[in-house]
Image 1: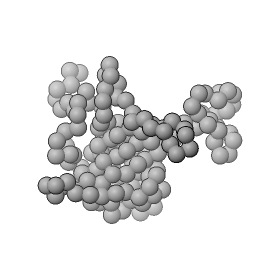
Image 2: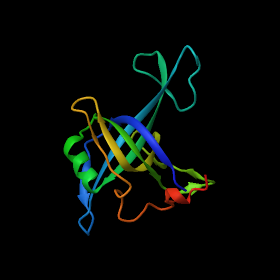
Image 3: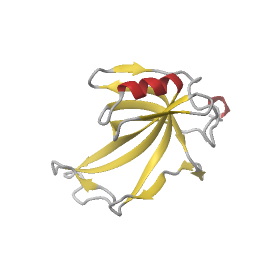
Image 4: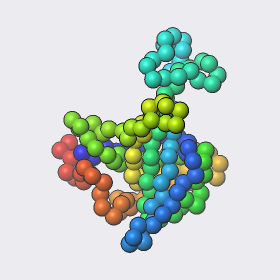
Length: 157
């Protein structure tokens, strides 16, 4: 099943670029997105949420592992750094159960369960700072589609 998503968030670490055996560039980076709700609207902390630094909101952070390919990989590696704010459009990778993509789940060094979604970038826009757009077309992407990938023209709606 094809799941296109759009996220805006900040890089959690510097990007890491490598090359496949055939010489194709791929850059991986993590992006944190944070959802906030006002304590006034929701006085009790929802499960899994935490108090914001300023104490006014409840926050839930989701981590995304992003893979950019070819020219997009090289450009992201050159211009992005830890803390950079980005807009990413892409396709969610991973296993699916009942049509829903599952995150990768692990336990952090602090013993807290964590999860992240994996995304193949199709478009990356640098926000703030130098700004600019790094765009790609449908030709950009992995050498082989991610598992479960369905072409847009195969979607029945």
